[in-house]
Amino acid sequence: MQELYFPEAIVLDREDANGFDSRYSIYAKGFGKFLAKATSARKITSKLAGHLEPGNLVKIRVVGNGNFQVVDVLKSSKIEVRCSDLYLLNQMLPEQDFEFAIWQELMNVRDDRIDRGDINDRSEGSKFSWTKVLKILGWDPEHAVCEQCGEGKVTRFKIGSQSFSCQDCFSTQMVSTRKFLSGRTSEFVTLSEA
Ligand SMILES: [Zn+2]
Image 1 (tube, rainbow, N blue to C red):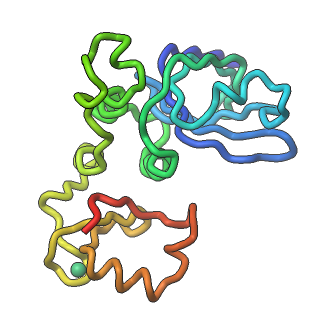
Image 2 (cartoon, rainbow, N blue to C red):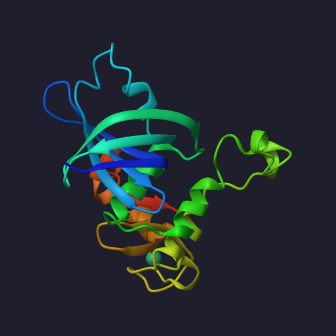
């Protein structure tokens, strides 16, 4: 049984597993994304669950060989990225593949930058940017064209087909396919609202 300790890791997503178990997707500095189960994490009495909220920056210890189990976790800070964006980022990141530039983007929006002296004022802080993240992952929106019409400024990136869409084509498609409107099945990234 392998034991791994990560002093800096971000909780990307949480899924309910069997019974009272939950499965978490974690992005650890120097290691990349991995999945870890926390038994009974959904019981109110569990000490782990509160620390494992998506968006939390944590210190985490896991055991296992590929199938990891959370042994211990402690929240140290939080990053200012919407859960829906973290969910999408989770879909896009491959397992056990660490990308330092992605890590930096996430650290740029950590909650305690003022305490750490990184910035003087919250308004100075940068915002999580899909444009930057997509570029790092190899899909540069600045040089992309809409897949449907071949022109227009792209405003969305569809994860499933790894394609860009302009606002007009996206709106048309959204009307014709209702599934885009329902919560977690919305597998597209919003770059900018037109
Ligand atoms: Zn278009």
